[in-house]
Length: 416
Image 1 (cartoon, rainbow, N blue to C red):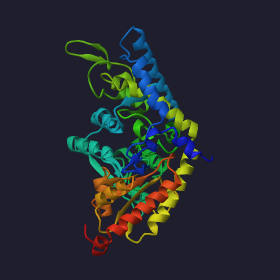
Image 2: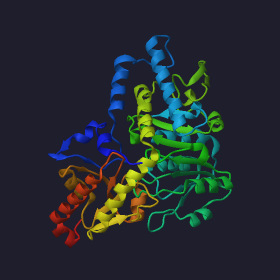
Image 3: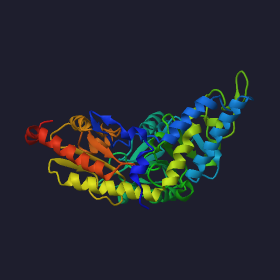
Image 4: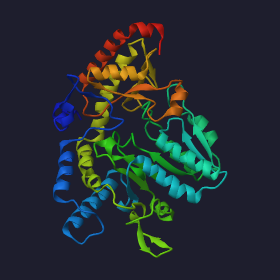
């Protein structure tokens, strides 16, 4: 399916603005995506017409807000093919969703000597919570290594698993290298040893169809803001039996059935894990983002991103001053490219590109262990979405060449 990109871009007001007198080229989609008019209008409409706290009031506004949020839960469940809306827990972000599992499942069910398998690709959000838990409970963390092009070494992975392996937590798509780990193979390997699985789908759900029943994962986490949705809203899917067995994450209002002075009884799913006033407006309007993505279709999204990725890789590979990280081939990877100009700090690259209106990410991308594995302090990162145009990739290429020419004396000297 071919997309009418110009027509699509009219739905995103921010894409028509200028930066430093130049048309904005937004290539920082792995950090957060831009928002369509429908979502912006829905957010305004909620506050103008339906603002009320949920699950607690008998009045019309509370009923309307509750209905919107619970409809969003059902919509989210349908979007990832979760078996029940009760298996969808709304959190602040994917980070909180992963921390919830570490706190409520890990603290209850893991014991000294148990092992957690992660990968060298992981974002800090899927690393630090397990480090905290490992230190607290005397657990061992083991890591599936990557090879020279950034793919997971599955032959080495098999040697990491044993009867001590209790959890495998891994990203479905790298936010640095664009690597797409073989989700089904990893989950299958985990199941051979009776280990539970958590998939960090933050970089997957915006770009590819997600089916938790097909994957047969135990937990899945993602964020709304990386897929056209609002900030402040994350999603945790959990297998119903596991969620029922887990202890509450936070204590407070709405997560209780009854409270005595010294004891309490937790509420049913998913309220058990949603203490306090949640991101009501954000949850209420999230279906607008899901509807938009469903209308475009993931086959079309993937095809458009592949066009952009292929051309960007061609440009970068033809510049001898540029160091590429990860696979240089567009096949089997997501629309994320990390690179450096040899001898130049990535922040200098990002600043120079910004002066040309091109927005990229710079730094360690919350993946410091991966940066050390790549033997760099950080990278520049360009990340694409379906509303980006091939013409923008050409602007990106020209801006890079201009940057190279400006800094050529430093590049030749190898100065950082």
